[in-house]
Amino acid sequence: MTMAAELELADVAHMLTALPRRIHDIVTLNVTRNPQAEALREGECTWTYAELAIATDAVASRLSSAGVRAGDRVMLVGENCAALVALIFGVSRLDAWATMVNARLSAREIDVIRNHCRPRRTIYLTDVSPDAAAHAHRHEAAEGSAECFAVGSMGEVLFGALDGSCQPEAVADAAAEQVAALVYTSGTTGEPKGVMLTHRNLLYIARVSSTLRALDAGDRVYGVLPISHVYGLASVMLGTLFAGASLQLETRFSPQAMLKAITRCGVTVLQGVPSMYAKLLESLPVATAPLDVPQLRTCFAGGSPLDPALKAQTERVLGVTLHNGYGLTEASPTVAHTRLDAPRSDCAVGPPLPGVEIRVVANSGGDVAAGKPGTLHIRGPNVMRGYYRNPELTAEAIDVDGWLDTGDIARQDASGALFIVGRAKELIIRSGFNVYPAEVEAVLNAHPAVVHSAVVGRAVPGNEEVVAFVELAPGKSATAAELARYVAGELAPYKRPAEIVVAPSLPVAANGKILKHRLAELAQRAASDVSPDRTMPDTITREEAL
Image (cartoon, rainbow, N blue to C red; front, side, top):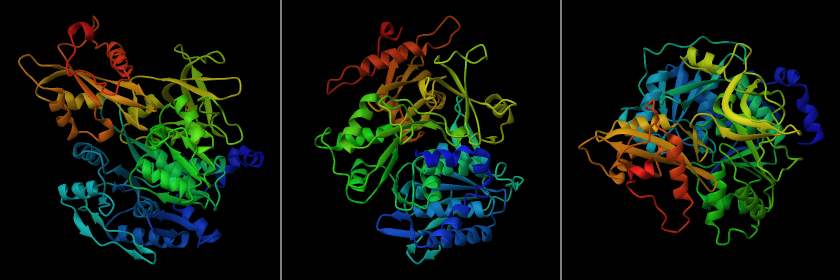
């Protein structure tokens, strides 16, 4: 970040006051500044900001005629595309809440979210996602006609039936109170949590993200992170458009498409999770040879821990610094990231964003000594409004003074940079997506042959894997392959165990609690075998389990 940008963000109160009122105002501002600038690129098609504004208005009109009111939830089932961007802005224009759901979630996962948020309408982006089409068919969605624009069609979208029982939420004029997006993340109990993110939450992240990344109208940002997740929504999509830059949308990640984007398509900024960079390197004939990336100026990693070796290798190949950051859905999501003018060779996640306060808290409840690890608490304009329809859980997460307990273990060095040294509880981050063991265990335990299961994370280069240990009921039988096929129909791909180990019994403490740390150690020992045919066995002995 330049000195000018530092000064620009220093007066946080003024910055917040100057933010637009709603997220769709980003489009309006850019139409005023440069209407013919490229806003979105999807395959061979492009939309200018003027065309995006037309699409946004048309979507808002179509939604209104379909019965959507201010305060309603609108569930958008799809994957990255220009139509999804227009839908999000159109929902905003009506003061409704956009509930983006990745179409690659299983039928069970989609239905749990749908039943919780009770949307007025569910819209399926069937043109870009066969999975969305399958969900639409399962829900017996009625076909709705799509609007067409000068640069091409926005695509066929299907409207589900109107839910007449949906009750709208109260509408607030203040951007800090009005919810813009309802983003679901699984809870530690396996139940979904609807994170209510306000317009100010998202606009603040868009404003700060675009400034700290020094984005301008000449940039083209690679948009492969799912917009249904908060990193892709706030930092990538909204941050890019806030700056008047161009967002190159990709429906799904592939290393070949990313390579083409940076070598031949003029992408200047990459944002991704560490596993994307690892897969890019794996796809190269020589993973250490520098690439010719003439316009790439910087890249960022977030969403999961960054391995030092992966960071160093990525920087050698791309010839630019791989910046690191940290966040969580409840913080819209960004809490901290490294600065352009202060690259680091370690894997610190950088100083907090301007306007974000932090505390590193000891078990006693007081602040830890400087440089010591503790639980990270944050406060600032990025902190969520709360969990939808769950005031008790909200009160547990955010205290009366506005401090959010992240549940993550961090330390802060003398320079102010944060290091994330561990994660409280048992969260697994697979390819940037949160996987809560309780949810996977609930699916496994529903199998008639399973009596107990325990799910742990296992570190692999640039990522984490999900490993499940199961104990079968007496007289029952099931192989790891059979259990894998069973969970495949119940869980999104990133939540499915990479390996399932059938054990005669699971290790337990005197109080009956499963000793997951022993299982995690066993899973990690298996990962240390780097032979090409390394696999874990279908079964383990009682001695190995204990």
